Amino acid sequence: MQQSKTYRRIDYSLIISVLLLSAYGLLLIYGATYNKGLDNFRTQAIWWTLGLILMAFAAIYSYSQLKHYIVIMYVANIILLLAVLFTGSSSLGAQRWIQIGFFRLQPSEFCKLAMILVLASFLSDKKGILTGKDILKVFGLALPPVLIIFRQPDLGTALVVVFITVTMLLIAGMKMKHFLVICLIGLMGIFVVFNFNVLKPYQKNRLLVFVNSDLDPQGSGYNLKQSKIAVGSGGLLGKGLLSGTQTNLSFVPEAHTDFIFAVLGEKLGFFGASVLLVLYFILLTRAMRISLMADNFFGSLTAMAIVFMWLFQITVNIGMTIGIMPVTGIPLPFISYGGSALFTNLISCGLLLSIHARAIK
Image 1 (cartoon, helix red, strand yellow):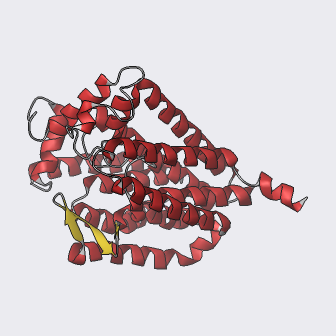
Image 2: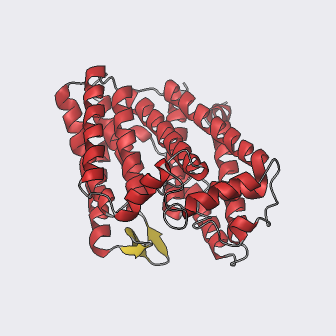
Image 3: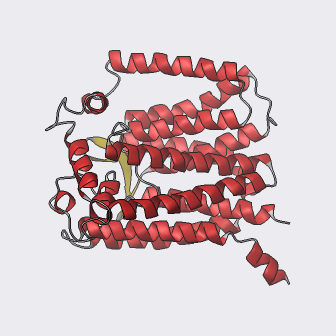
């Protein structure tokens, strides 16, 4: 009887969707990099295995107990982000990683989940009643990591954290007048960013190319141009996992990371892209269902924030690949190459399973 109850406390649909998404990602990484060797594929497979273990631990652990370690989590998060600026390793003009043996840790990826837990802990104690002072405190918590991440520079991840913060405030009961004030401040921030050289030149050029794709087709607009060609050339069924000129001949830069959806579009076509979207739909709907089932507001807010974190990243990544969003370097959840991002997503899934298990009586 007890064993039967245990089985019912497991959300098998969520687990299966995550396993299929991760396996799909491995398949696409293999297709994108097989002609350069199997190192990336093997490394991602190792990270996937370790990530599943972390997911299992997160699922078993009582998520409510995390509230006792929120201060430690926040301080550790800030320390790791600062460590990147002083001792981190660089790649492609960005300093985002800390080298630990063979593994390059990217603290900004873990920051997304850490901030979800920190803000969920704070907001859940307010019981849906938020004052202007509470909102200022929330941004006081969110701005330090956002500014440090922006300094690396990593505009994409900084935007994810900002989006998570505003979304969680709305879910927690922020008044519309406060939301409008935040939007106004955001517009002023955009004006300052564009007119006072806050952005790096390549970041500014990416945004300008988004407005006019013909502005710099051989420079800042090259990635977007080649990505759109790759996606468009795939047709209904694609050219095959091991075929495709745009990705196999490296016309699409960073094909196995930021632009992996272009790999999918060219090699597996509209059908392959549809399969991915169906898997994401299952993942997000199951996660949203868990947020509604949670036995307390902390769990509900955490689950809903994870949903919107994934939704934002999926929308922006696919959107930038097909030209309806600016290129910001946001990875595709469970699909793009990268250990830190995969660990973060799998641990997030583990938290959802923990919330689900404790919501069913």
